[in-house]
Length: 206
Image 1 (cartoon, rainbow, N blue to C red):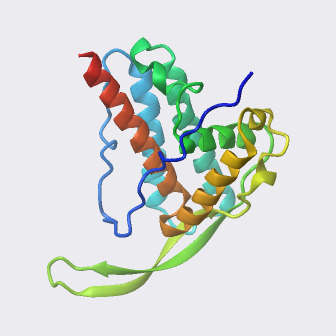
Image 2 (image 1 turned 60 degrees about the horizontal axis):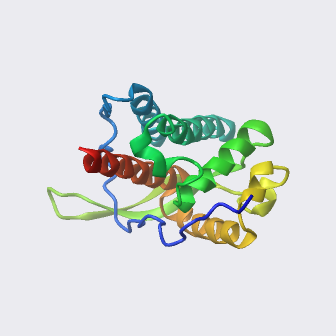
């Protein structure tokens, strides 16, 4: 059996400026009439990301629970996609998005082998006031995975499905970019990619 192909050019863009009060486009229940189960998983992942982002200073084990639950909802989207012929390219075997496979490996690891070590970091930001045009300096707490390296996947049988170089590239990207806005933000970016791909597939079929 050959290795799973990953397109390392399909990482999402990471914003340097974000709206802390923005409402995620998936916060309203996305309805796919042909597959309500698909809608449920997308909403579930989005809800958990949104809920966690509104609460600070949670114990690490609580953040781990939110994260484990969110990636479970996220990865199960591909399992629901297997029931839809028009979403064939989004199944586990054919999806080439690197972050999908990263979170897929993390789900297997965190559910069956070990927990990730989640820590809170404080980043310096300048928050603008749209009414006055002024900027306020403050610290924003974000959650990152502290033990994010190849050793995390030790014992995970699915690791053998990927080339060592691809895994190193993916881990390097996530390690670098999670320190901008946190690992939940990275999951949100990947979820948005997934949602957009589903929308495109549906539009093409219509």
